[in-house]
Image (cartoon, rainbow, N blue to C red; front, side, top):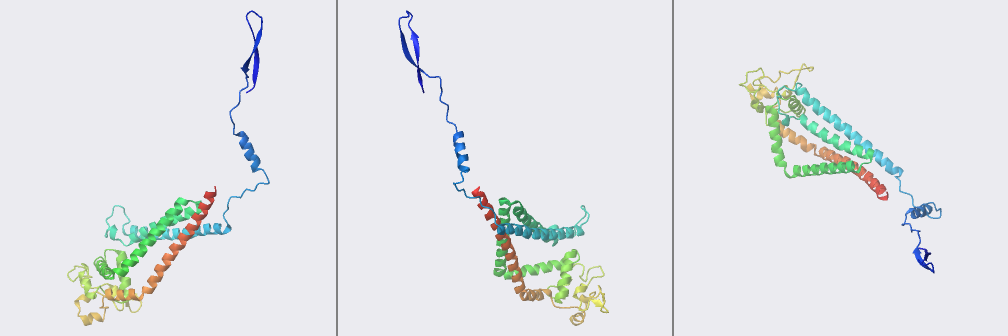
Length: 314
């Protein structure tokens, strides 16, 4: 700081003396405006090269749009499956207060509802994640796809390692379908299709229908001592009209007489042979499903990588 001198007078006025005094000037504190100006000057300096921020390539944009359309397709398929399942449940019980003939937990249409709900939810997350460029939704989509893939691989291993238990479980399922044949329209349709396409009747033989309370010979109805029309060798009357009564009274006939009217072989062995014959098609379908999930996961990973690259630069 600059110093100045002040003249002081003695009381007797004989002399004076100069004393130093601090200047009134005060040094201002440090300010960052100068650095900002320097930075602005440096940014505007044409001789200095500054790299541009990375931008998404046309290929990255194509991958993003493809991921959006890919997940949109499976979202619509999931909604369709969900709608079919809900329609099947409501068709059996149109009134909210009505009694259900079959428990909800054992209703086959519940599988459609759960599968459609899961597929549509996961596909919606992937669709929105690709559209909104949301890392959170894309990570959720990847985690769900990996979880589904792991469950599918685990299920395949269980099928290979527990084939005998699977065969017993399938037998119990078929027996349950026989018992609830007239109680659930879905089970009735499934059993009729199996017996008609495989040309079989019952689980082990046509005599298994005696375990059904409606077809048992002691039942009071007109279907007592009979079998469903899908067991008949010729379910069409005169080759054109379906004959729903072709299986009536078959259980009261002898084996030879019954064999002339219905298929006497059981569906358990026929279904097992059909599944063994379709092993290649089943494996191809499972492989295609895994490939579809892998393609969706790779697309989501590519979009996530592009998002991470841009955000790291920023």
